[in-house]
Image 1 (spheres, rainbow, N blue to C red):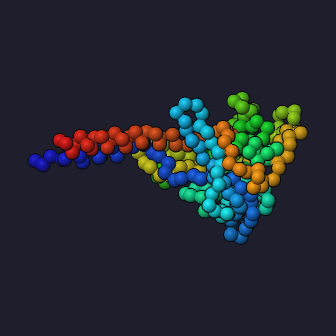
Image 2: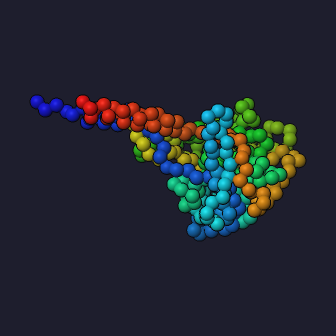
Image 3: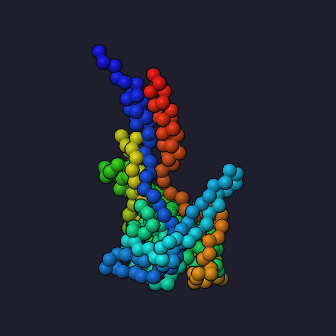
Length: 283
């Protein structure tokens, strides 16, 4: 009887233990809206700066925006609501999927005394991809629940979204939304408020039976968020060449959501597979 080569067994085992993981690159930029084309569903951002972080051996990550070699980026809008929320000249932070521009999965309007210290008042798209905090010290925690009868690879259509409106770590209001539902919070006495609409979404397929061991696109959802800042909060200074120079800033965490946390394990699994393959070859 023929024996299966050890190396083939090792490869099969490695493939079996790999968890689901996101593989599509997300690129975040800051700039100014220079064109809106509803007919083409496109948004153009001028003078983009790209967001990136370095990770020192000790301490928190250091994040900053740096110049790009493009003078503008064009991408499709995540929702038609973007053409109601944004106008030319608005300072924005935007995240695209699969490279710089092309497909915006989130667009966020900036508000604040200085460009490097700005806050967000409006988001169209997936808030979890925006590194700038919301105005008024508000935080969103977003969790989507999959419709396990509507899955493809690593993602499923989201049946609902659990939305928590928070101040720091304190939950102010929580509500489960179905697509096209909206929730509001205005319980503070500073004139501020938050409105969140769940337009549509995706959820990880890993919680559905038989949906493990795959790699593929990360889930992306679309929300429309509007924050009315507290009374007296300073208005935004327009982004200019002098105010958007790359600046080192701490990593803010305005939102949290269900995202794949398996990439480190995929990397470790790959290293283990390589080592095992080496042993198999020696045998």
